Image (cartoon, rainbow, N blue to C red):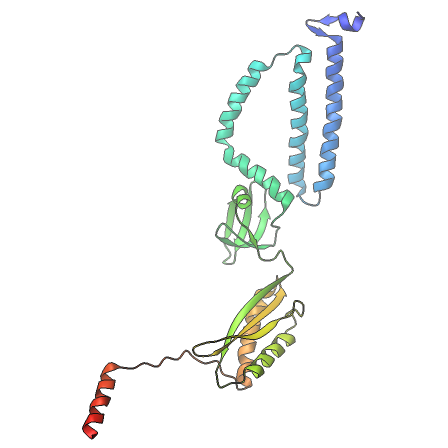
Length: 277
């Protein structure tokens, strides 16, 4: 046998030491390559501080895992330590399961990016604007000006409605006009109002049509697309302008009407008719 095979330090051969050192060196190189690849892939998707934390966790996890796996080459028995560490890890895991769940969810949210800062969303019965997406929680500012902190695990496992992810958003009215008015003229007036508004989109094309004949009115459905960031103001502007233009053109929006018969009045009327006879 060669000198390298037979020279022993305790129970450790020189070959095992060399294998350990070479393996750890290769592991460091591989860990750096993995983190560098992930950094290039995620640099546009994650905040810099969040990305740095994730890369460090991955880097040191790889190195520690390989180091533990190679310790038998150095004659080190970590079975007792690993057992104690495993039990301790289970206890800590139960204690920190919510924190870990939020951390992992935050990482997946940062990668998937179903919501971004500035988006208008509805999630977990909270509606508002996304102010910040952190590693453990997401901050939403409601339309009342309240700031709500939602754990990332809740965000990740809930249905999310994103009102501004698409560049355009549609809104709809039902405009009722009197049966005595010209429905075709009303449609033309409404279309002209929509056409004149600078933020009402031409594509997709707006829709204006008679939908049904109601109890008190002919109901016209109006569907308009507007930029997602401006849809609410466009909706309010058009609603008032449509009402104003219809009235200018002599088209009325009728009040609900009901014909009510009173039994006593009917009885008196019948008595008066009998007396006349």
